[in-house]
Image 1 (tube, rainbow, N blue to C red):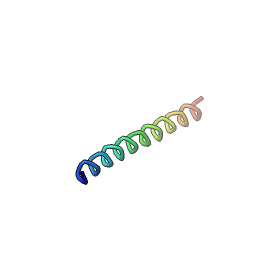
Image 2 (cartoon, helix red, strand yellow; image 1 turned 120 degrees about the vertical axis):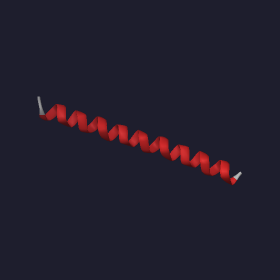
Image 3 (spheres, rainbow, N blue to C red; image 1 turned 135 degrees about the vertical axis):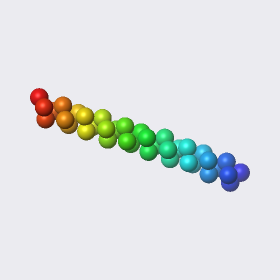
Image 4 (cartoon, rainbow, N blue to C red; image 1 turned 90 degrees about the vertical axis):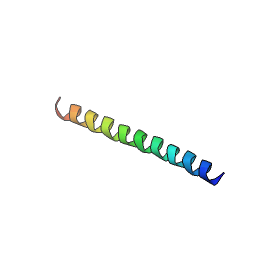
Amino acid sequence: IFVQAASVAHSLFCMCYEFNMQIKVASALLLMAEIHK
């Protein structure tokens, strides 16, 4: 059970991490677009 919980927590962490990275990239691109207007 512990191993299952650990793997679930790990996959959730990875999903959240990738989601945060995508938000950072998107906001950076928006910022660049605003600057270059």
